[in-house]
Image 1 (cartoon, rainbow, N blue to C red):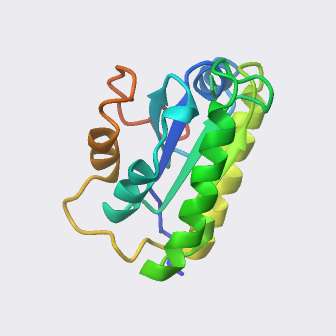
Image 2 (cartoon, helix red, strand yellow):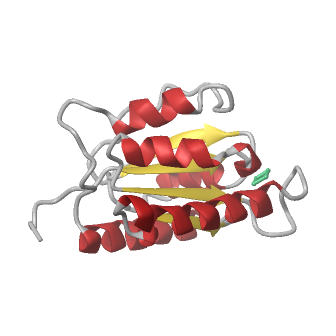
Length: 169
Ligand code: FES
């Protein structure tokens, strides 16, 4: 594995929890990898299988959803639906030659800035261990493709590129 492999990881983040936790992590000056590119959702229940697949098809090295703690989704079961969709995609991936570990579901509260940073770091290390997505193509932006696929459900957010070791949006 090339030591200089810097994965591109798409995070579908609920704005009530994970997105706020990312802000908190930034305020707390917690460091986490600049590999994370966020797409803000009103609830992870809006996440569909096709959004995950499009991100991977466009070459994202890893994709995860970060939703509210179980029992605390503002739409009651949105995060449970998201987990089911993630599990479904995990089953599909081997059929197209991708490792199921490239997708994951996490839960956290808006107060868990350190947990956001821990998850981002842990998932990045996992993806570095797997190596680049073999579907990655030169000139294709996984973040742009994922945003476009989820444009009907994503919340407005310019999502600038994160600065090195800084907070990502
Ligand atoms: Fe946060 Fe549903 S409102 S996951």
